Image 1 (cartoon, rainbow, N blue to C red):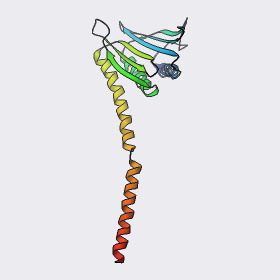
Image 2 (image 1 turned 45 degrees about the vertical axis):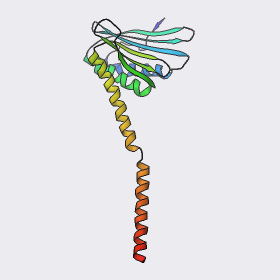
Image 3 (image 1 turned 120 degrees about the horizontal axis):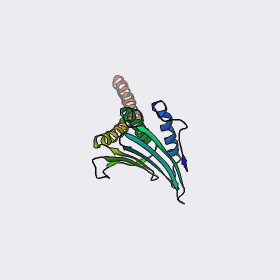
Image 4 (image 1 turned 60 degrees about the vertical axis):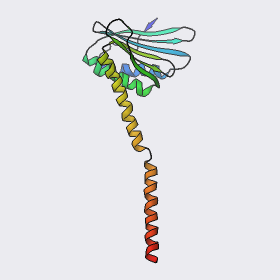
Length: 175
């Protein structure tokens, strides 16, 4: 049985809504089922298949979403999807693999519950760009966190040194 995540044709106007629906499915992830999101790029067309398979083998599919593979798809859909997926879902593995005999590669992300998100049919350059975008996102977050680490300790140290200097100044004056 095929289902659709969207009741309307997927286009640039509803990319954000579609991405949120995908993320909502991944938020339901558990050890009892596997979520498989496969985005295939072939002949300048994009096919998106999403399925949920439980331990008994029952499969619920959401598929046949077809888009044109163009700059708008990459900039407004694929990159935001990858970034939001990485920041929303606990990702354990992000990599680029070469699975076919041609020059195209697969970008993949595997979650802690062994859910799989793949983008097949990318150039090596596009796949590495997706990896770089995700790494940059993480590094920006780490920089923010590391800039805040120890701030309380540094302020406390400065306060203690100021008090100590004040006490020493009072002692020296009294002598």
